[in-house]
Amino acid sequence: MALLLASYGAAVQAPSTRAEEPTIHLRRITAYTSSSGETDSRPLIAACGPIRSGTIAVSRDLFYSHGRRRCGDKATITTARGERIKGVIWDTMAVRWRKAADIFVRSRSTALKFGVQRGAIEIRSARNGQN
Image (cartoon, rainbow, N blue to C red; front, side):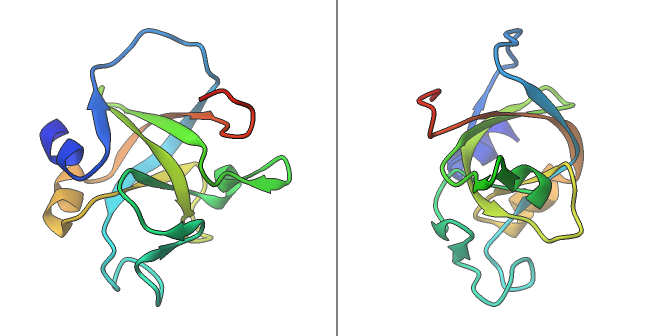
């Protein structure tokens, strides 16, 4: 699995014991593609602009923070399986989701293999120079 996600733009690393950044527990972590069945009417356009490799979509409760959108903020997702996936927050999820993240992948089979997981996310603001 780690190699599949890495080949589609998300960096996957071994788990780390560092706890430098605040961690938000996620109820749901999934993977998605740009197919019309998984997105709105413009599947190649994310909330922050054209879809790109390493895109992470987060639920709106996480996307809008302190009166601003989190476009470009770096994120590290740690799944309950111990996978660490690094990417950039570049999209938002449907209104119905809370405490959730969606990782962009290129193929439907990769998304299905990823399944539905739980875990945590660490977000580093692109505006505060914390990258």
